[in-house]
Image (cartoon, rainbow, N blue to C red; front, side):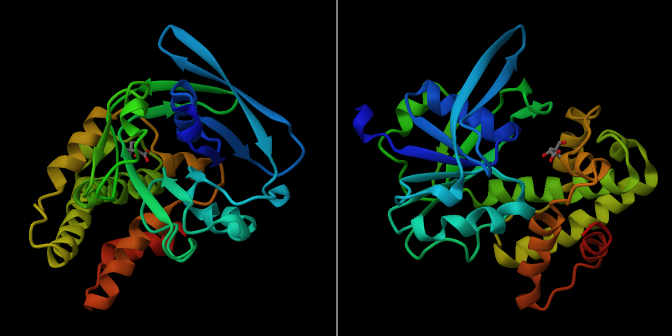
Length: 289
Ligand code: PAF
């Protein structure tokens, strides 16, 4: 069985990247982190409640790769995807399996060879902290999908990755998460507030409503089965993560580039060919890019 498991290369050793590498290792997969520089290994501590465990990954500089990649996990922040994928271009081929573990959508568009297999994911797990210590605050559901069938080894991986599911058509789930991120992330980043403020502040609530209406109008045009009415779901997430700093607010506080282009920018790119304007999303993209 072990011989048939892919060897993974990981781009992005942040919270979700290291948690995924941990579950894959637990299931017997081997994972190498791709990072610039000469580090030979990467060590991280993953804290699960009272328990903690050490993750050790071999590290390789992407410029030193010498053979085609079997399998690639893309878990970097979306603004860095293009630069991270560039040195991999000679080593990606149509049999490379790519799993994208990122916020937003579309960050890999145009960066993968034709015919390459791409698995999309949606996770509601939450990991906090900064290297070398990552605190797994919630091990919730994660869906992999976007293809008719999972790989043969997927059921075995599910034994080691809590609440991991396969869903062939992930689109509505991805859109649902996209709208949550397109509302909570930019508003909390712009106003430098915790997620829960969105539920109680009248002005922010009105903006959240306008953003949801624009997104729902677009997504209903793309798919008449889109349920619309995103606001209650967005507010439910804001309530359950009330005390949290959204990832975009955290990026802005650290002076990092935000993921606005892969979130609200992606909605604008979907709207353009339909001749639709999303003025509230456009304004946020302009301010937070
Ligand atoms: O990006 C984030 O911060 C999270 O996806 C969410 C759900 C907005 C909670 O903070």
